[in-house]
Amino acid sequence: MSRSFNTTGICVPEMDYMADISGRVAAAKAMVNQGLYFAISRPRQFGKSTLIAGLERELSKDMHCASISFEWSDDESFGDSEKFCSSFIGKVYEALDLKALGSEALDSEAIGSEALGSDWLKEDLKTFDDLDQQITKLCKNRKVALIIDEADCAYRYKPFFDFISLLRDKLLQRERGAGATFQSVMLVGLHDLKTFAPQSSWSIAAPFQVDMSLSQAEILGMLECYESDHSTGMDAAKISELIFDYTAGYPFLVSNICKLMAERIGWSLEGVLEAVKRIVKDSPLCTLLDDVAKFVLSNDPIRDLIYEILFEGKEKPFANSDPNIQRAEALGLIRAYPKIISEAPEKSGVEAFARIFPAPFRNFGICTKEKNGCCAVSNRIFEIFISRLMASRFSNASDKSVFGSPGSAIDESGRFSMELCLAGFAEDFGTVFTSDDAKYLEDNGRMVFVLYLLGMTSGTGFFQIESRFTDEEKMGVIVDSGPKQYVIEVRSCHGKRDREKAYEQLRGHLDKKEVQEGYLLTLNLSNEKDCSPEAEWVRYKDVRIYDVVV
Image 1 (tube, rainbow, N blue to C red):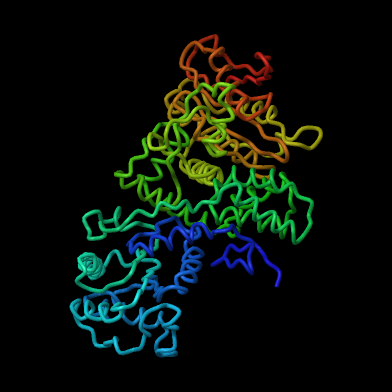
Image 2: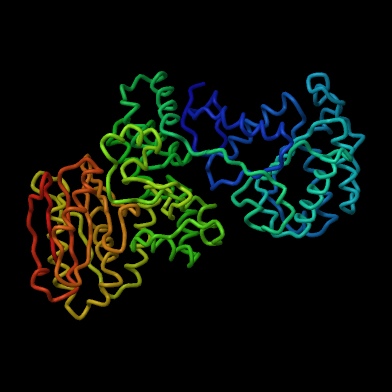
């Protein structure tokens, strides 16, 4: 059977092109062998189910493993203690497959424990004392690991917290040598119970610190396996680097890009950009983005947080105690990035710098330790999608906007021209806005330009706001159109314009992107003559800058 890139379920090495997760499975198994209780809490479609499947296969070599799910938790199952206890023990019984195979379900000699029969099972459970006894009988002289997938579906039920308290008590008894209980308990889901309910008995849990995002090397390994089977002639190293740059290793996004390239586009650097464009513009291709849109649009505090990061460039310390940051991180929307310092690394330290910091951080200047970092949108695809989402929302609510038409920025060769795009924006901007709109533009000027880009790039490419290059002085924007990438900085002018500073900062941005041309757009919010409308190419040191003032 030929392998493919899987975006719809558990990945299996024999059927799917996937990263080698044996190291992650081994790390989780080591925690189980130590008898630890822990949570595997990661965003949607981040490889949790694949990890669990691999872990279950490994654990079954040494112990009994009951892997159950609380996905369909409801009042009928978990509404009171009796219902919860009965439902839970039934799930465990079914997971161990005792009814079908009886005591032959597991080889006691291979596992080194008593065979599992059904003598431990009591079906008419009514209290947690009954459940306590059932767990003791099940685990006496046996190692039994318990995996609960979609555990956070039960967080709204009080009996679940009583169950966690029972697990805690039995674990403490075991450590005193006074009882039997599960070898290990793993709660799998979006939210870690320890952060969701800090006062719960799940404080006994150990942290699960395994990085489940894919590294560039792991993406490269997937592509090399594909190349070995299909001989496409792709430059796997460069393609894997670009995929990582756009996804930050988000497993579902990586597989989604690869699947599009394998089945519809072809393997090239341009193909990566085309796949990204299709993903952010065609939600059926990426159901994950549907979830992102629903959450961002329905949660005002988190929408405001992301708006301030993306459009206003505000530094938001990554504080785990902030419930909005916790929720946004749980959904994979934000993460902590090292802070950016404007100076580049010393030449003599570049090699060491490259070894210390992963690829997405190397172009951002010198970094501090991540624990001192600020919030940033998790990956470039999310930045692109959320920017488009917020721009569309702004267009529906705004009385004054400038809308771009893709055809007006196409040059004589039939390609997108950023020079024509900015010239068109300057002309339309001067028609729509006057000096009386200074306060409106103070608050919304950046969004006005982003909305214009949304129209201009609708058929030719896509844009993104680079939150790592955005602050209260400027907004960094990247436009990808075909094989070309344009670097733009948007500023507001409140008085005399400091051209030298603006040029130097844009030059630093261009240097990090390794390009020689950039675009500077200044929104004039004053009547200073030095900030009068203009558009011209300027040679500044070793770069060319198209300087536009509107």
